[in-house]
Image 1 (cartoon, rainbow, N blue to C red):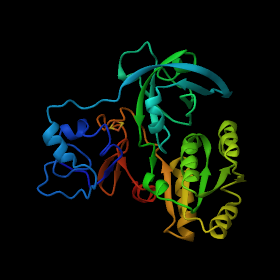
Image 2 (image 1 turned 180 degrees about the horizontal axis):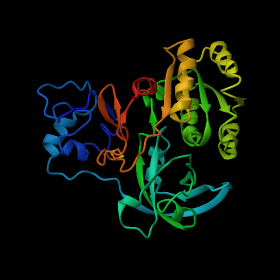
Image 3 (image 1 turned 90 degrees about the vertical axis):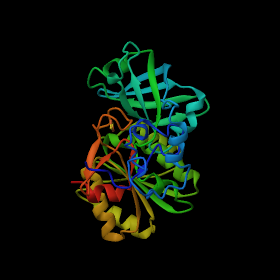
Image 4 (image 1 turned 90 degrees about the horizontal axis):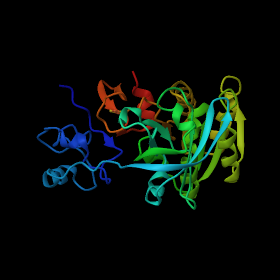
Length: 318
Ligand code: FES
């Protein structure tokens, strides 16, 4: 049977580790748990194998479902809704992480198949408010935009490939490039980059869907937005990267857009750190259903759990 390569897991060492995959012998991080003879995980945190051996009889710690109040719902564009949800204070810090996402579910549904994965757009830390964008497309999401309460399951962390690349920047020149609705999860990234003393430039592809609410938040953080058209004046972007000695780029669009940006970046300097949103089809978020699996370098990768580098993902995607 095909075994996954050494992969970093977004949940490794956290409060939800060891998870169901570890208990079933399918841990994506630990070779010993997967039945290997030697440990090759290079993991420097608490040993998952050791924890599992000692805690075997302890059930997996599941993320809790919480009934939360919806305090505001507003249609901000044609069939695009901005929703504010009051959430427990204990979730605030985790949901401020770049790549954080939640599952929302109609409170009248029991079954977890109705869970819809939704990116965190922003967190109002003072008032314990989660802000999200929802596009009602089917029976999972349609009830969310008319409800006054919602079931929330959180936190989940793997909404971005390249989290180490984001968090390791300190006092550097960074660039965030936005295209279309993927831009929703850029706010936590920008906040983290600013918090670490980085200078952040922002480019928005004018051809893609624009979200005023995201642009306003970026401006409120004191950043200027540069507008460009990837098809017509990508030189603007190239000049900016070269002149500002950019050392990290978050390309926040769909895969074809991110590939084009990566080509531009690698044409300038392939040592520039690179992160992208995880746009893969997330269903369970726990590594169980296989819906998010992609093949990279002849190896199956569960993208809801495996934390990859943005360049590595795009370069090896079949
Ligand atoms: S979403 Fe189910 S395995 Fe990843």
